[in-house]
Amino acid sequence: MTARIVVLVSGSGTNLQAILDASADPAYGARVVAVGADRDGIEGLARAERAGVPTFVARLSDHTSRPYWDRALTDKVAAFEPDLVVLAGFMKLVGEKFLARFGGMTVNTHPALSPSFPGMHGPRDALEYGVKVTGATLFVVDAGVDTGAIVAQSAVPVEDDDTVETLHERIKVAERAMLVESVGRMAREGFTVDGRRVRLGG
Image (cartoon, rainbow, N blue to C red; front, top):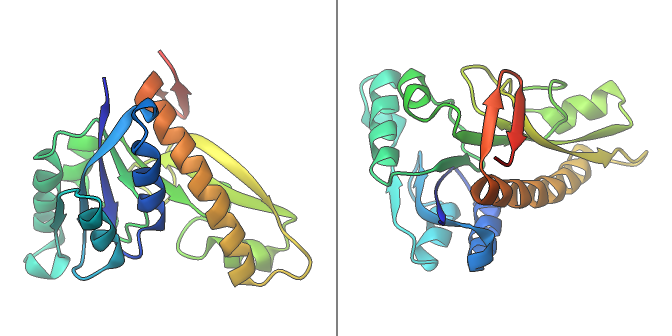
């Protein structure tokens, strides 16, 4: 059975594109049934439309409060009956309603090796701290910021002449490969979340 994936984006959608490309092969075990965004006119939505995938937008500014937005987002995602929700560069924190419905089946990436350097500036913070190895983390979304149970991690060496930009670019490459491989495995093999541990396979 092919797993149904809803992907949420806020920008260019390069991670989305990688999943779309991978899911074109039936052996991947998953297909993107919808792509949602928190703003209009972004390349991520255009990528979905070019691939013939339905799209929707849930803008925070269209709702009187964050909980109302969260409920609207939850309803829009639920309409596509996903088996897995992937936040691929989605720049909003989902709320209580969303987690009540999709907690344990929503994953996100972070451009650092969690629990180090959470938040918006993982590559910069790693560079400033002087670590020799950083990387990317795929985790199950919870109510915290980059705190969920870890599905997979990919290490990226820090070079002596790295800038934030060069380091972040290499992290993105590792992140994309890890995301595509892990989402495929989660779709094909299933997964369980047991406290802090995520186990792939039955």
